[in-house]
Each structure stands twice: as C-alpha cells, then as structure tokens.
Length: 323
Image 1 (tube, one colour):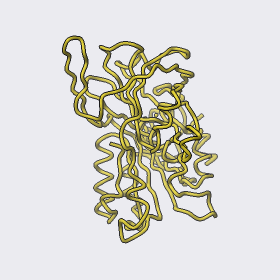
Image 2: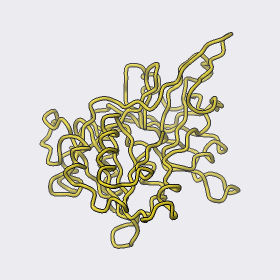
Image 3: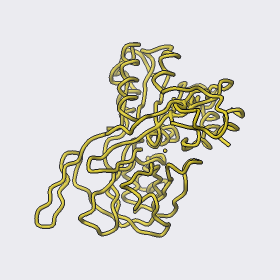
Image 4: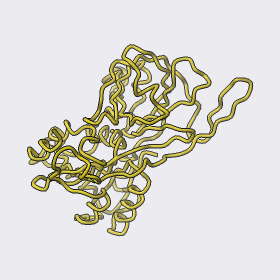
C-alpha cells in the first residue's frame, strides 16, 4: 500500500446529445493487493434520452419519469485527481429529496438553474445513500457528492463556483439490485464474495456502494463477505479517490488498481497494467457460485467482465449494473 500510494505523488457523467456514463479503472502496486490497474479507452453509454420540443416545453422520453426540479446550491467544487481530469462537486439537497436516496447506483438529473431549454446531465450519486431506516428521523445527510469527468460539453458544471444554484431532479433509478440478488435464498448458494469493477468516473456509484454499509463486508478478521475492487484508469494521475484506498482496505475491501498507459505517468508505476478485464482474467474467480459483482464503466469493460464472470459460473442475476 505504501509503495502504491507513493507512486501516485472519477458515475457517471453524461455530456452530449445522448447521455453517456464514463468510467475508468486504476492500477495497484506489485507488492500490494492494490497492485492492479486498468485503463478505459472511451466512456460507456448508459442510455439515450430523446428530446421533443413543443410550445416551449421540453419533454424527455425514454428513461424514467419526468424530472421534478429543486433549486439547490453547490457547496464545493474541487479537483478529484492530480490531473484535474475529474472534479468532485457537492450540492446541498432538500431533505425530502435526500430521503429518496436509498440504494447505491441511483442518479439525478442536473441543469443550470431555471433553464427549461437546457439539456440536463445525468449524474450518479457518488456519496453513500442518505435515506434513514427511521423515516421520521430524516436523511443522514442532505449533501450529495458527484464525480464528474471534464468534457467539452459540461464545463458549465465542472467549472461552477460554490454558492451557485442549479436545478436538481428527484432521485431516479433503482440503483444496484443488491438486496434482491445478494441476500436471501434466491440462489442455491449464498453470496460470500463481492467483486467491484469500475473505470474512470464510473467509480462514483461503486464508491457509494463501498461506503454504504450495505455490502455485508467487514474489516479483516471480523467476518462478513470478502470484497475486491478492480479500478481502471489511463494514468495514476487520472485516478479519483486514490486517497480513500487505505480507508477502504481497512474496511475490508481489497483494491486492485489497473493503469492502461503507465508510460504517460510522471513517476514510475509499480502496479498492474492493462485493462480491468485483463486483471480479472489473470486472477480468475475463486468461488463463482458464491460471488456477486457490481460494474460501472465503459461498454467494452462491462461486456468483457460480464462474459468472464458468466463463463466462470457466476449467476447472471448477481452480475449487476446500476442501469
């Protein structure tokens, strides 16, 4: 871990007429369980949203209900990695909207304040779920965090200063269906091992899952499920949340960063190289019928990983995405 961290010396973001979810994977050191990295060539799309304009009204058709907008203030905007290719943005939410966020992998739409003609962007919530088991107690937090990859079309949000207001929709989507597929007796074998796969800013909903407390993973030596994250990026400088890796490992999550273009880094990279799916193929799945997986990233990665897991014997329903 120390060697990995010294060598370093992130949703999903949508930007264009069709909304796309971008993700990268990261690498790790050869001397640490984190010694894996994976780079993602291009962002993976989640779905497309068609737009129809009539009498000045914008109707979004195809994915989920119409947005219900709330005026919300941006509370922070900071680089998410050394290269500044991604930013972390925090937004103060109304309590009733924050109370809707129950499952990692859910998302919201965001647009400039009061701009009915603006095309909203779709952002997976990167912070852990805020809904409380006791509804009367209200949400555990009213701040949502987002990890956004900079693109040519989203500079209005990636460069937004704190205190600026934006319109944010209600919480949308069902998130990762972990309760349905990892708990209970739906399958003949219980889930004892959870694998996570992310590339680039696709780490956003994966971070939410890791920090949700809903994965059944405990610190080493305290029982619970085992867990491993394969996280791919182009270079170590493009790796959001690297400062959280030590904390996640203490919580019981093994981190395997994978870097696809180590030759472009400013410092020597001692971790694994290539792509996330390459790292999985090399490692294999120890007990497939007792394993589950959460994926978010580019299409090439998710399709390859799904094929590898299915061929290894992981139940199809336990290979989960957030869309």
